[in-house]
Image (cartoon, rainbow, N blue to C red; front, side):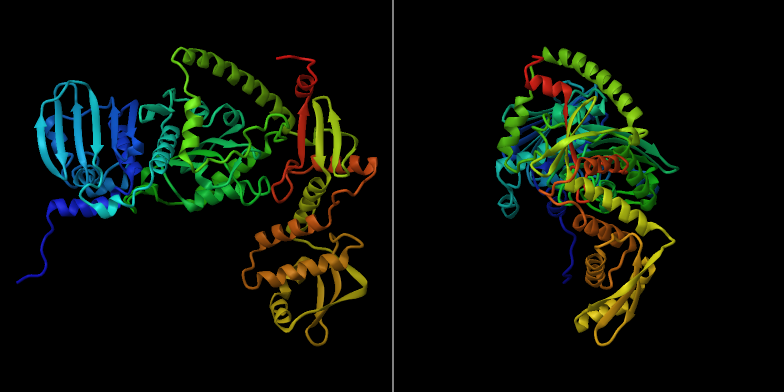
Length: 587
């Protein structure tokens, strides 16, 4: 008797559901993506208890006739691909034909749909069709899912709390709204509106609707292209940072995706503009030929492989880097209430915050007027700033004095500035060291009295193996007895009177990297380390002339706004803010 047999369709669908339906947000994702593929421009998601009790997705898309509605619940039934070649030209959100039968196999599903000429009602439980009748005529589709995992109790017990499941769905809809600004999204939980976007096809407005005014006002637009990719979107100023990469919103051909190389390009572009443990808010839309993107590597269709990924990396990195460089990034001291606000994992707080933003219908008209006015002001401001930023070297600060032994007080015609003298000199030194390290031609200063470096046996062997790193930098180094080196010369960029301290730090760094040497990372790490150690310390008072010299050097830097570790160097108090503080103006 044969031991191998073909599984029933119901059992196969239950197994497939384990890959497609992980949690409530998985169902929301599959249903909403079907609505997007149906060309809907309005999609509503209604949750009860975060989706644990019920999930309902309603759209005004093309709908289906009775035959297609029933076929949609068949395994591997889809309207989106026909031939093998179609797998290489996928331009729809779904294509596998697994979502609906998988959902129906582990829950109870009610479908109402109409294509305008006929309407259909289908009721399915555990994969079995209970009803298949004519329904109410309304163009579009409505799907309600209840009793999730009722027949797979092992999966049911792994569902999280209402707050967690609700958060996952909220986060998903926010990303889909950013990917499709032309679609009006509404998400409710227990009849309370959590997310609502206007479908205005204005990406900045959607960012405003999701993140709020304080964040949207701190977003910088970017746009660029090469032979294979077009990129467009918004990045936040470095003053707005989060603790995780959850706000890296990346889309390829309007699909929400995850890709480590893209994340790395974004993070690398912000290098020295932020601390390593913080991450910006980014909305990045990538358009390319579908043949360059493979979305058929995971059931969720979020993890993708991209051909010519290094060309895309370079495009993203360069564009974001230039956008940051070409904008004035001095944070205003009195407008930071929302800076570094982290998305709370407790959904109740999120819900409360987001529901506060819900406005009566009549205020939406006012918003259109206000947003236009804000946009006009923003455009004027951007133009003014770009004039300045085209030649940042013209930005002049006049030192007034020193506060608390640490902060230089300066002014110009726009307001008053506080400059962290340590962070400022750290930035100046960092760029000086880095530029010296990048030079192909090195010059060496010979020491009148050589410096002797004694090491442990293990460190001696490591340094001996990597001596070429030091010689390429301009060091004259030789073995001298047991476990000892002698330094007879060093690069000219090492500060006078700090030679031995600097040399020892460089040697320690070479030893620490062992066989993982990357010249770019090494130069950056070395420059940052030396810059920090050789800069003015807090409570070290410097003369007025030294303050003036430091400020002149700071504005000449490529990035005068942050130290190499991402801390701000300068904070602004505008004249307007000062006059408000002293009640000279009342608005």
